[in-house]
Image (cartoon, rainbow, N blue to C red; front, side):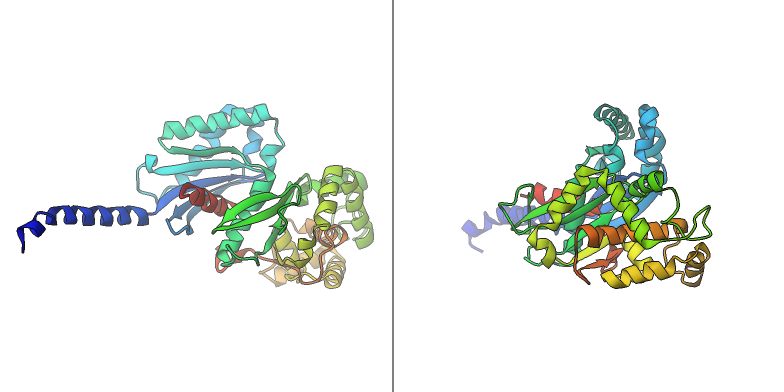
Length: 382
């Protein structure tokens, strides 16, 4: 080999080493925990995030204590709820604590607390994360529109639709709120949130209707109407389920929530709503599945609710005879079914077969927590 070439060999080897080393680091997955501090429970999920923007759920642990329940003792939230939850979810994670990000994100339940109370709770959690030696990620309450947007991102990534013009929308009914998110396809529409994903900008209409969750609005109906028309015969003092009276009860309850009513009217008036295919998540999915209408049709849903709710024993027999049906709070099935009908058809005015209830997509649960990490990772790599 010529001497002039030989002297460049060490330099070439060094450049090759650096390239390989950088590629190895780029392919090394990162780990993050996202704690979903919901209105009825707190769930911690450990994710593996790679540079290809893929998010893989590694482990999950749930505590039925909501974070917002620490409003009377905010200083204990970190050590009594978050620390034990992190210990459980990270049980199989062998790396050092300082190599993992901890994100604790509150949703509807936390949004119902005062800003001062929220701050005290999060201060306790920040101290716990620091004391345990973890890396602090985002700790705080997310906006309602963010919750919907994050779930929308994860759904469309799983469906392989990110970067396309044919994304699906989401309607998620939780315990304390309902999220509605879809691409409005209108940059000039007031109230949209521009979101760039896979090189394309979407103009998301993403709204959270606080107080319009399955539990919260049913409680309002019960206060006004009593447990009468929305419950099947044989449950407590109910005289029997009456669909029309129950539907009217939900109308009356919604009339007391002018903000939610205004949002629903504005949403129903967006042209893209009529052309978007939606998925129904959480309580919406369970309700559509219970009444055997996973892909909702207006007439069929009403018929199935009416025929299924003749008596409380009929509800329990359906659960006993079909293990695939959701068995949680059987006494509320008829009320929840009426609420879903009311939401989809009386207010949003969806067409038949425009929404399908799902729990997972291609074998993966649709979680806003995963969508949060996908967006955070994409923004980090810009």
